[in-house]
Image (cartoon, rainbow, N blue to C red; front, top):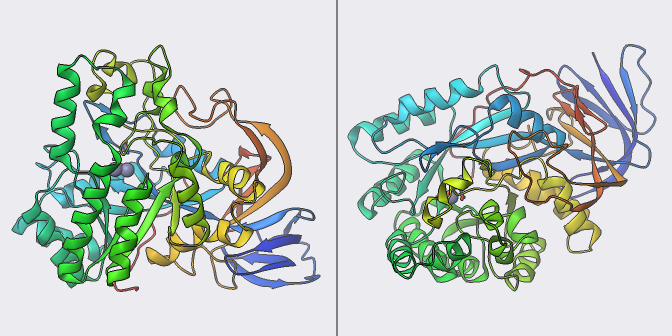
Length: 460
Ligand code: URP
Ligand code: ZN
Ligand code: ZN
């Protein structure tokens, strides 16, 4: 059924205009003032509201076997949570064990999403080993429509690659025309720090951050960008948590390295004092790289606002407090790393970024939607409000007031890191390719409407 959205304030990464949007056959087919009211169309009055392109989360974990357990969400829960928070496309990390074959992993991860997602999805392919079999299978996965890799410099023995493998992955990525996303920390330095702290009986979650200090992350970024530079490969630093790490990437960019930076909503709004909370509550805030000293936040906000930091993601990785985070009660190195945030990213960014005056509306859309679409080969199908773009739209109520709580969220996890945070504005109505999926902040859509988005390489 066609959809007509009337009188909204349409905000893209470059413009703000008041107009109607007509959607037919899953895409936007007209934009203008006073479009004729088609009797067959569903009509939504968006007067006084913003209309944004569907938001894109470029760094999500759903199926994640990790640290002796599994992340809690499935596509059924995660995709509804994403939509309820205004995210209409997500990019999940495929994280095979080093013993797994890449192609089997790709098929396994895809089988967890096919016909089970309410929102559109694609993947970054984890290159967690490199040999001739992996090389040919990674090329086959690119041909199947996945035009980005993921490497881990951390998590040695699980997902982490050594330098010879990193060199080969960068060479392959350059030859295939795909971008390499990277988790940057010096794994050996982390292992030594962890050992020292545990030997000194420093076992609580408050020791997670000191075990992976800012310098360890900055070293990782320095290392990664030099490997990218050797091949002229394109790289993307995921979950950048602090000023020294971001500065390493910016310094590489000034030398001519093709490098982009992602930060997370958690790093902008939470800090290491959260992981120091008593009674093991700090474990809810354990992720890697860790939440940092608050002084980093001004740098991250400023560089997100000026575009030096391209994208704002979540690294959504939900582990229950009960039974999962608790695995590390007597040893912080056993706390499953990750913080759930898929549902709250956009609304928190609006409140903490736009309402507070740190981000303008265009940059809000740019960093939470358009930049990810451009970097990862989805633009202008996604990340835009244009004739021909998918009709993924977010009607956003800037007058909404509410409070975040695990009691009302859609994510399948027993806590919310933003519990009690006051929201000023929220995604009210959300469409997926022209069909209403969220009304009044609640999922009302089709559970299996989401589709796998094939992406072409060489889109730079
Ligand atoms: O702590 C984190 N970030 N968990 C998810 C895995 C990763 O490193 O992205
Ligand atoms: Zn990571
Ligand atoms: Zn991640």
